[in-house]
Every structure is written in structure tokens, then in C-alpha cells.
Length: 339
Image 1 (tube, rainbow, N blue to C red):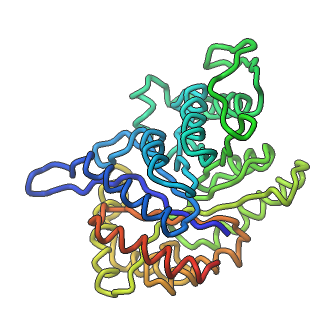
Image 2: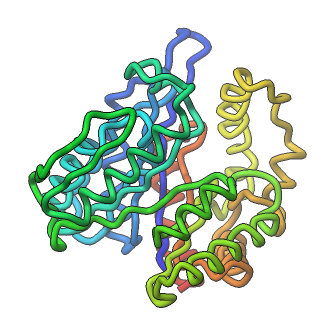
């Protein structure tokens, strides 16, 4: 099973200055952290896309390209590319370029995204939310698999016998995963298309997703795809420390980000009880010491049969030294217990 780390580039808010932390410093810290992941043998790094003041990264492909130049083995993925508000030709071009820079290590996680800021920013209507994604996914998959593309849809100009350059290393093909938050229709689409699946499990109890993942497996095989090529990942909030006071202290980072997002979504303030409940064996938070996190990942493998786990690790913008230690423990102690 592959183990990875994901990030969104969270920026802490300074109550004294009324400003978010410097995005340039944060991005340079992320690159330092990815370099450490590669040295530790962590399999995958996934970088998210956001268009808000509280996140540093709006162009994950650029951060991943910078990471490619200082790493040797780690796979470099978007986590996720908000495909509904992106141009599929440009997405393929950017990730094919990343693939060539990294010698074949690029991956794309495509999803609708849980934030909608990119739609008005890029001039898209939320009334077309579903159709935009479906059309653009169809086009991206076609570009990824065919040298010469002819395609037509309703919301984008047609393509007639056009080739997108450069082509990625593996006969032009980049691994494209479908990232979902739990919508059965999205899971069904991924299964029918034979796409690898990433399920974001960030709340409640993971066991609640078992029927959804079994549904994917069933429909994947029903569509005639090779069981040996089936890949299933989960992406969950993660933080590792063998010091109890550090784990307890991380609650404040976590709460600050949950409350910031929740204020625009009508959520109640995040509580310590929710934090501790999420950290329990049946909860969705992979936050704890190296043994606790390893045991929980192994439990996910047992109940879901996953082939990849991605720990989302920078929620609330922990200090760089705290992040580096969490990554070190994940790579040196948690990963061997899982593998």
C-alpha cells in the first residue's frame, strides 16, 4: 500500500496584525517539507488548489514543478484540480510538463472541489456546476488517451483533430484519479470510467463509507475493468506526534481552520469533544502518536481494502518545525508499521 501526504497550504491568521501569514514563506516551507518526504521514502505528495486569502496555493502544478526539481522518487499529484473551473487542455499541458520535469512522477486528482471561489473568479456559472465537470472530465480523459482529439460539448468550443503538446512520458498518459466526497453518482461515474478513486473522509466515522466503496468495487467490475488495476485511496486529516502535549496543542490549529471555514457554512464552533471523538479508533481524524496513526491506517486497509492512504497534514498552519517532525515520524515510524 502506498502512503502519501497532502496539503492545502493553510495560512494562519495573526489577530495582532489582522493579516494572514506570508504566502511566499509558506510555499518555501512546503518545498522543504516535500524534499524531506522524498528522502524518507514517502510515496506521494498531493497539493490542493484554492483561491482564498487563507490558503497559499492557487496553482498546485507550479508548486509541484518546483518540488520535482528537488526530489527524485515521490509521486507529485494535485489534490485536487478543480476541473469544473479549469481548462482541460491547459490542465493536461501543465501536468504533462510536470511529468517530463519529474521523469514520469505526475498525477492528477480531479474533483468538483468543496469551495466555489474559482467559479466567479474564472467567469463560470454555478448553474452549470455539474455539467461543467462532466464535459471537462470527458475532454481531459480523451486528451490523455488519444494523440489527435476531436470532441464537442455544450459549454466549450469543439476540438477538431487537434493534438495537445507536450505529451507525457508514458505514451502520453498521466494517471488521473477521481476525487469524491461521498456522492454515489460521482463514485458510479468513476467506476464506470475505470478511474482510480480517492475518497475524502474528514468527518463522522469512516465505516460509514464502506457501502460506498463496495459500490465502487462492484460497479468497476460490472463495467468490465481489470480488478488487478483497481486503485482506491482515502484522504483524511492527519498529524503525528509522540508527545501528548503537542497532539493536545494541535487542537488549536485545527479548531482555527475548522471555525474559519465553518463560519461561512453555518457550522457550530468546533469543540475539543469533536476533536477527541475524531481521534478515537472509529473516528475520521488520524491525529495521534506514531502507533495510533499506524493502527488506524491498517484498520482502514482492513475495512476498505485501500491501495493508498494520504494524510492531509497542514490544517491550521502548524509551525514549520512541527510539520517537519510530523512528517519525519510519519515516514520513519508510522509507515514501516503499515508496510
